Length: 178
Image 1: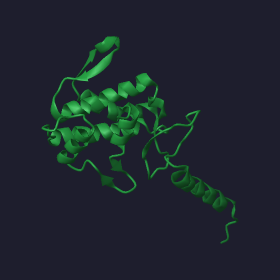
Image 2 (image 1 turned 90 degrees about the vertical axis):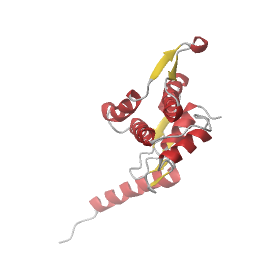
Image 3 (image 1 turned 180 degrees about the vertical axis):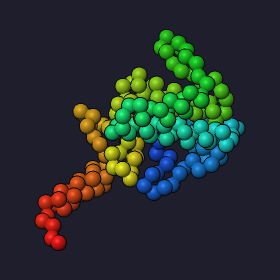
């Protein structure tokens, strides 16, 4: 299984902003997603409240990973979603960990919340980002040495952004005729 950063990236990417498609379009689809990742059991189901919490958690994570906003704006949605998940701190194996107190799909969402702490502990959290291309907002893991990557794909989103900037500069430089 992948690490916590990959799990969080995949969770955020269940909604494709550009294509307006959602892999978690219903509580049943949420349950399938959580089940496929081993976060809930085969018998667990999700209800509307779980689904609403999952969407809040996902979009809170997306905002927190969107680095061109102020820190308060980035974390307010995530803080609200995390506050709705009953968790406790344990010292399992001597290291602090968060453990969900609920069952079913809510527990699975709690495990996603715990993955945020795990990603921080491993040093992976700063590498989790959301594409700077406004229409994309796809989550990715910045594997560059200096953590300076801005786009999910330089070939697509980076090119779009740079082309737009180039055209805007050219338009400013052209003499205006009346």
